[in-house]
Image (cartoon, rainbow, N blue to C red; front, side):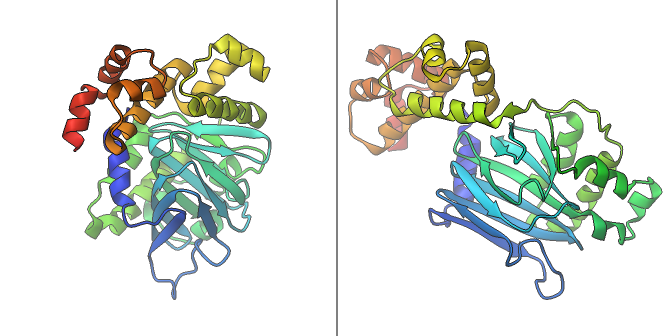
Length: 330
């Protein structure tokens, strides 16, 4: 259970009202037209923050923090603007117009054109996420004289043809190369962020310029299947006092057991049983902090027959007992 990342995201969002997704600009709005213009609209039922920087003309980067189930984005459709998203913590998913869905876990990377996500929702299956988004206007990028790209003979037109196709998107699993590009950006001191981002964006473009377009990406799922999995998730999490077998869920939702297990893990990042154990303990933590219910009462509410079984599971996940957790919190 990622307690520290969750708390880190909460601290970054402590001043953001619920139902608000703010964009914090760090560029000269008078001198440079940007992608967060009047045509860019956001919404969420949770809360989120995007800290946006103008790195080069036509190239923008944002550090993103979300505590929400999803965030919606509406903007103009552009087939020449490449959207790149890196997931640091939590999970991020999209349902694309072609009927497929893709989900990123920690360290994964997604690439698609702004045409693919012109009116779409970014989903957060775990209820939180931290990541980086990069938007690159490839037409404008061609007009820039970036010596590193010229020396390496990076073909911007080839990047456009490979990653900005309207009929596909690419999602890559975490790798040392991806981690080496993105991880340092999260820790860059605020006073040097912009010049540091200039270096890292060129490193990213070098990586894309020599990335094999046939590289195997993350598994895509049918959007209909992921919708069914979300229904299953709702059933499981809204009725914690009940327990369902995979076979029972398979029959109820008309989805074979192997697909159910595979797609659930693809969306939520864990097998059903492991995810539900963590979910029950997370809800138990909330009740220990927010209520005066006895541990036995909380155990029953989150689906454990006895206080002893709840305590054992709690120690497995939280590395402490429910009693100690409540005492330390208060």
